[in-house]
Image (cartoon, rainbow, N blue to C red; front, side, top):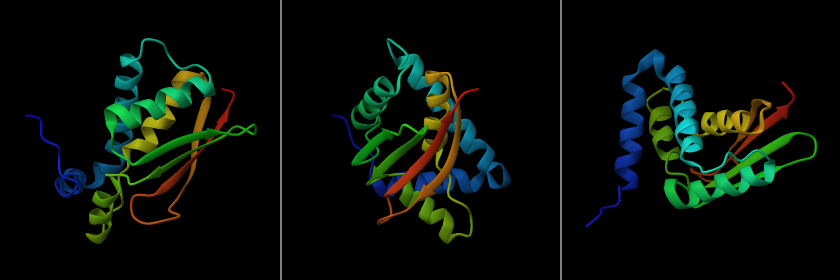
Length: 148
């Protein structure tokens, strides 16, 4: 019978894993995000090469297979801005444990989305911001998409 991973264990594990990496944690967070993007894109029958296809594919992945957040919605604006809104994220409590220990949070999701956007759309993507508008587990990640 399958068991679900407890949120408390996942938070503690996430914090311990990145805390153990010390100075390398930030670099490895980026690498983890890029690896997640690569695995996800390889799992798809077709690369989502338009904003509409990317939105549908990413939201499906985050809801069905990843299941790490209660809400994951990405929007695309005409000016090249993309925003990923997450609520109930299971990674954020682990980052709070890191911050409480004096370290920086390590979110591979922001780098996963950046890498996947660039590869899928064939564009340059820059992570331009991260806002925390609500409780722990809610954030809005903002990206700027432009020609290479």
